[in-house]
Image 1 (cartoon, rainbow, N blue to C red):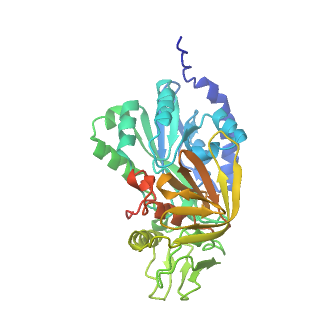
Image 2: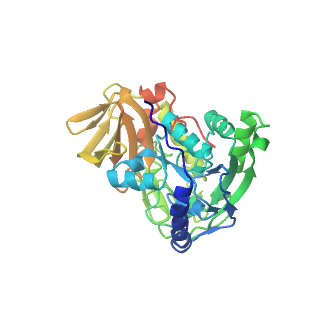
Image 3: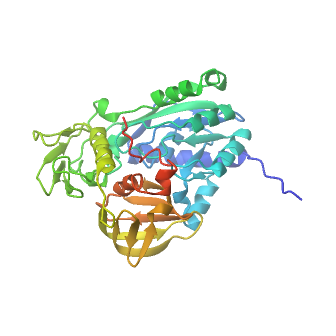
Length: 402
């Protein structure tokens, strides 16, 4: 006998999200300095898909203040590791998704919500922005939206990369707000080709805080930039950059630049050619793409790194703490190693965590406060990994962004 699947019931979440909204409003306003310009009432039984750019870890709570009614967030499955967190996020209706890959189970759960007259919150980039760029919008997302036939709300967050940048240890002071950029009914976007619809989404979600001219003040505004940048643009050495206060410098060649309160680099030294972070980001991609790697040669190494088993819905387990290193074939930790050929996908989470899947299991590398996880995600897209062979990664691949 076949067990009948339970239908999605939005009434179950109305009270939960009313309470969440009551908590989120004072928290985002008083603690984060966030302001929301618009309000949108999600009508009972009307499916809505909210699409937003992604700037801070608190984005779902910020966006929640603009919408009256529950909207199930699509979240990385890494936050579901650990039984308590798995229960909590499941209770809130969050839908887990593996970063960087199409997940059939996620799509099925999304469809269940939409078919039941519910609403969904989704960040199409799939990752918090590092350097402001608006990346690739997948064809599968556009096709999915057309299949759902839901009302699409395009939401913009502004100032998050200034107030709470991906690399930060402490927040800055400055303007942080959200607004509804556009509401599109299904009959409007169904008349568009997939390419036209993707262009609309990409254009309307485009936000570059460095172009808005708002200052973000902090005496430590450059600190921990080495979580993002690991190659010196002058001497091309790896892991020699160091940040302090408002300055980023190289311990090998001495090149130095200020990271200004207007989110740009400033220096009189011609050896540092970048003003925008996206320029530095693309330089690093070119560097990794072109770097020669000999068999058996250590490419990257880090000290004091935790290796954690972090499968969703299971208790996290510390497997190792100490030095790690990577060559053309393996990622070494203690007396054990990961075979790079088996790495399916990798992503950076919360600045200094590298989350990756190997041989069907999920793991996290967590380094110290200056650990750069990004370089490992980049190198996995250069070496002979399953992730590279399948073209699974659309965010940390070595194609230039902008």
